[in-house]
Image (cartoon, rainbow, N blue to C red; front, side, top):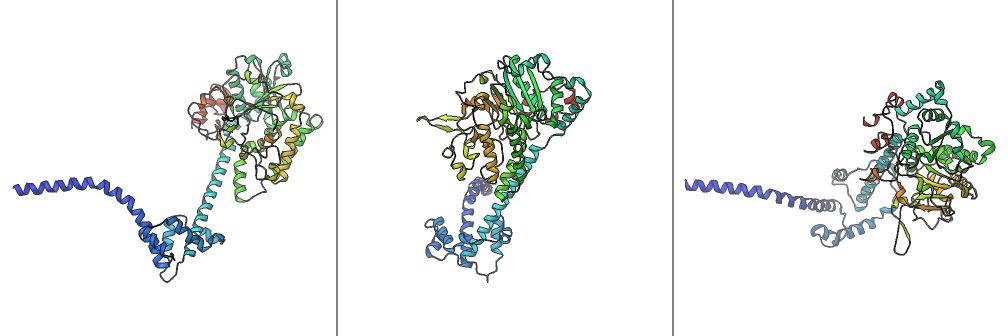
Length: 518
């Protein structure tokens, strides 16, 4: 009995020891097995194919002496495969994983000699194949993102059609904007004038509503909305039926300006933009194609985006104007920005920079440096005054203050047109088509940096950080994830919709309210 008890105790003890040993044994195996696999793989390759041609190579394979990366690199260079061009068929048929490469090597018969050159060529083909797959995936991702960001939701399309119909049948929707007794405000320089060039009715409504909500003196605000002909009737109907008292709103379509006789410079810009648009897609290459798709967002080809450079012509009697983008939500009083002294400059823009001990400025966000907008490897850019300032921080659209009087005395608009044409003639090698890069060149020397706290940008490129959406600033949703699209980031839908009236009959008829929660 006693011996039996001892045997049972011993068995239990062995079981406890086994269970305690499982975890450390597994960890040790996890560390050693990969190393053993690598050593075995090279030994197998060497034994069957004489890959290692030196004693030192064999020594690090067997016992791990020396630096294997140095020895393998030396063997690699001796093959001279870096200068060998692989044909497309070889690259496309190459394995796309390490497992595939090992399986391919195992499939080689013993009679076939696998030397170092063949081995390295197989690795090179595999790497090129994987790079092509990654590039193709990036291209598809860019295309789908562009498609999602440029598509107009059915609800917004419905709203435009419904309001256009309302304009034709309802006299109130055609009433004057502003009312006759308020017309004098449009040119009265004692008011705060805010310009908005857009074809997005709801976005314009949110910009106006949020600006009024956060203004201490909304009765001093005058909004100038410029839109295209196809959107004009719907845009006019919306603001005629939804007064923004005590502020004033003016809605004008491009077709209402006499460009041919009074503004020939505007006609020149329109022609150049249309010409650039017609030829932009001709220039290819895989890398160029990726950049092309990245640039195929609505703002790239939007004529209104380029006509921002003609504010002096649009508002000949104004001295100053604040320009807002239609993808912003204003959460601060813009009166202080309007009063800002530009020190004889033309444009005031928020720039996110920091000051170093030696009084030099550094761009806090590397993505905002000039070399992310302009091609500084091109001699045309290098020969400009900005040629040596590629690390300088670029300003951006979103919220900008302009001294129109100083602008009229400069050649900024002519310079902008020059650069638009120059980029097209260079086959868009100076920058991918867009309205900001030529503006950076044209306004160089005429820019006044504004405190970066005025603007929180890139909210359409990156998920908003905690606290950003409650910032006392202008929130700019530049990027594909607009707050009125389903691809918008969490929290942005609610913030944007808070400035819409959920009981509005037009919004409810087109299911605008509630679309983002589907």
